[in-house]
Length: 114
Length: 135
Image 1 (cartoon, rainbow over the protein chains, first blue to last red):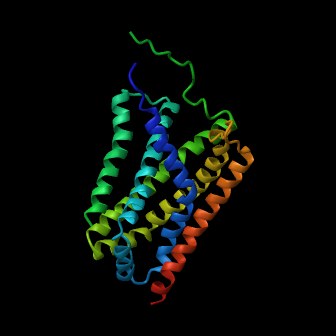
Image 2: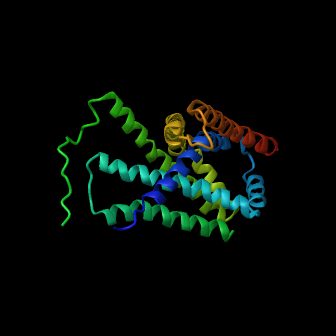
Image 3: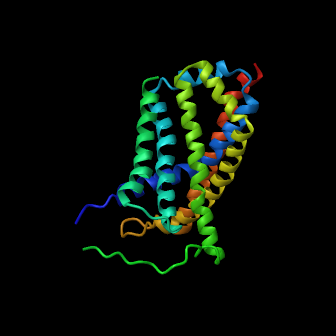
């Protein structure tokens, strides 16, 4: 019997769901607040730039992007099944989980080459 | 030869029952949350391209489309947070001989954690940006 990918995809889905529940609404309120709070984008850029020098901050930023990507990919993948939209597993799995993986890898590249 | 079972179920099975509609609404929160995550990812790309590009991304946040996306994503994130935390004690069952925790405590801990995480993040943003905003 082939080994299932379910434990890995569900772990990433669970981690992303937990992260979104714990900081999702607060994060969105924060980016909404940016519009009113930031009069000087250069100062914010400098603050973020110095913060992102620390590898742990880069790792945390990667988690905030990658885990929600896997979480939403998993839900939308299974949501298509609920809506009776079917297709080859390799294609749908490739688009959703492959897409989340590719975007996460790109995000890691952009973050760690700053 | 694999012979998958073909379900005899109408495509709109979830429209009739309010519980199924709530389930589909909960699952649908993933779409705005995905789009919002892509908006954040765009922010990282713009940030990596320098100061001017980052300022452009900040202005995207304030366009009507950006505000609409963030508004819908905020509603989705709130619904996600409430439904997710409510499910945690059903999935995270701590009931072994060595450690036994009442599901009500598991629920309460996650409710407090989510509240502290979200409010803490907003307070941290305000605290970090208030001086630069005034300058």
